[in-house]
Image 1 (cartoon, rainbow, N blue to C red):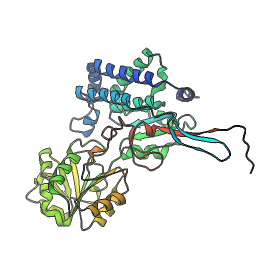
Image 2 (cartoon, one colour; image 1 turned 90 degrees about the vertical axis):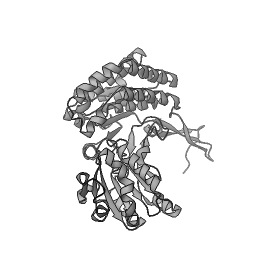
Image 3 (cartoon, helix red, strand yellow; image 1 turned 180 degrees about the vertical axis):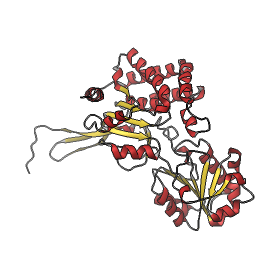
Image 4 (cartoon, rainbow, N blue to C red; image 1 turned 60 degrees about the vertical axis):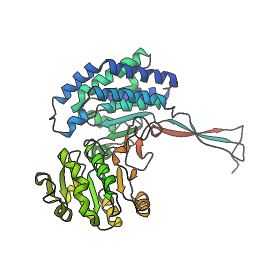
Length: 416
């Protein structure tokens, strides 16, 4: 038996009896929040070791960065989780049968939750805090590019657990070696679920190799459709916010789909993107409306490879359509089922889009930048699920639980 399998076995056994009262959980989260603030300089210094290996122009740099403001935000996220009631032992359903049996369906932890993620060290705190509050034990596998950042955050978590007299083995940071992930993927019966949080490549790799159940999160190929009835001012602010608020996140806008009858407004819709040096890949018809208006150095003709791509950069493609039906068809062809949006004033068009577009989150007259557990007032999130089984959309505390049936009888026996 390898050393990792021994650790996984120990964690599985620990999960069977792992139970903390809510006050204890909240005390730990408060303590970690305070420790993050007290150790800002140490965290930033360790983070700089990771940043030193990344070009500041690379979008990964932003995903890696931990500065004072971001550390304050992470610490505050932990305080927000404290305010959220425990998701455990909720009665989800109950009924009394004619034979006298009393049934209850209650929420329970998933067990041992493994999360594989890229770049963002804040995920370490998100995963641990949500798992702790939902009664789960967690295994983390961060990217090697965030090694020092993840390690210092894990050390702070473990120190808090030890000081609060809680077994620090309820969290484990998997080594960077590739074979470590392979052992995890084969740990059937020991690890209950694997959640990849990152780009399409990572998600495909986990899905194709894991023998344990997988919940897909992260990859966002995001569209916004500007309808013939769209309000120009709303469109300008929504498109700018969705594209440029943070280009390195999974809910950032990748493709603007526009009705052909509104092409005369296209330049106004995307003019604010010029100040952020956003490169545009426009189909031929929309390109003609941007020539001599949008900077030539940033304007290109779109090809097939510019659709269905998660740019994670200051880049955006444009597709022209002649109807709502064709807008939806284009989205369904290229979507990753993460977040999609429409800008329109026609109520019938809005409702048709909302109900026909198959994605985890569908917006009407609002930017996709809101797809986030915190923005949904769910606290921190484990990721954005793009699948339909178990959970869909922002995964927070409730999505880290399963359920079981409790049946109370008084000696009844089955007669048929």
